[in-house]
Length: 405
Image (cartoon, rainbow, N blue to C red; front, side, top):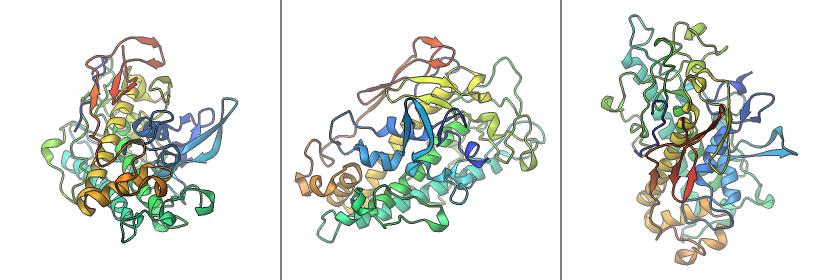
């Protein structure tokens, strides 16, 4: 669990299934490939530098984060790929269900609310279990990266057109990379786990603030304003390991999701409940220098300045935390040397050349590199415009803008 920055305010299917969006279609869908940008902020290497075993080199990061295409500044909807982190939103034939997005764990402490605290926690448990299984799938897939002499298998890691090009990520019932490349399968499991972790902060009230000018209600549930990542997302625990109830705040809620996704009491199974629409903080422009552009019209993003930025900051930090857990799991399961080689193969774009025993590290060593500390600013500073949120979090050596007032 890591601290995230305090925020001064309180310290068709594609458009609605993801809080934090996957598609790059700002004009058509008001989506700005938020999952991609969060994942790139978490894992991009400094320009021109080789991976140190923690950041991902460009082509490898493309597979995890996805990439989009702009021509003359205009987003080309559908161009590029969603990447592993966007796979749960892919129409293949439909997106993954509520557990992949931490939906339906809604609760409000009022008489006769349709779901009890215990029932909401049980729905949260389903999400955590689902993400742990995805994490385990990634760990299992990584074993095929190396041969029996601990060498990287070229057919399992290449991303060139001769070996299939970009990875293909399919819906669970069809799930397998078209060329059965272990690197793609490992990245897929990791990306799907990261998707749910990132969605939790956009779907829930963990980091946000409610509208203080309005009474608490199903349309304006209390914001928790927490400044640390959620401890129950321990990906290294076995699936079905119960969440410690002490780690779940009494007023924690995510949103109930059903179509049409509306506020003020919902419809169908979400009638009378806090909805995904009430809590989502999914639409906004995130730049790779950590700054923000305009924030979307989601009610919760507008309820208190800094809510979108707080969700992004938490998602970036927790994504890094999950990746650190993944590296630790590989080393524990397969041994330090094999684990280091697997990590190298995942983050390097030319692992056959770069990952050769202890000499693979031309420009950075997985085995010998200390984990970078994640520091957070003690305060946020400044405010530029209505739609620009300013503040800072230091992620390693990178300053990421996270909020302000």
